[in-house]
Length: 235
Image (cartoon, rainbow, N blue to C red; front, side, top):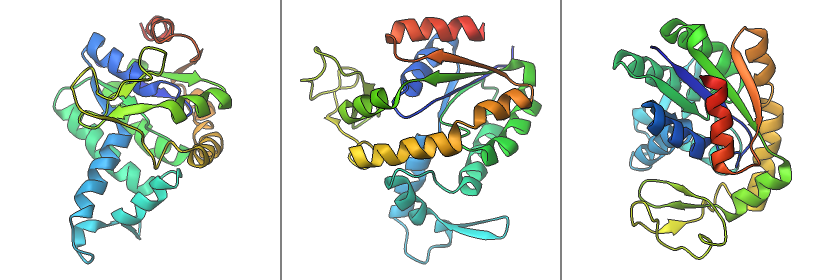
């Protein structure tokens, strides 16, 4: 059966962790916008300043990938036309490859949703798209992000607790653990929270108003409890 799942919520809500669990349990391709953008940034870093591949023209406006990287590092959302252009190409490719998918971090603005959701509905059927908003408080967002570590190799996010706080090596792949110093410092997190409330949270009403299956859950419980709640909503 065709299936597409979308998880969204504020920074630190657990979208990445829950997406990985659902991907493994349900055999879904995990599409993470952040990893797609990081890949684009890395490729652009190795290009000459005037390399045409660094610039993409969309709707009459030209976007520089390295300028988008600076926007991202400030904790702001990258330009929606550019993100949408990349995402829609990837969604079409994944569908053509026969993948059922889970999206973590896309769409992030109503602009993106207005373009991506009709495509997803066409590819997977609106009735097969399940959307879950994972809610946490601003205080929990700040705590989780300032204490978060990811591994250097596979970018796994390691949960912070008494057992993991002293870890320096990822238990999953053996690479070094590090903080995301650009995205997870306190000031950047405040910016990301403002961006979320102003530009991403309005998606909930967009989904409801356009007839998509969308639910809310409390994301402040244990990973296992949140996972069970998501499963109950999408099955």
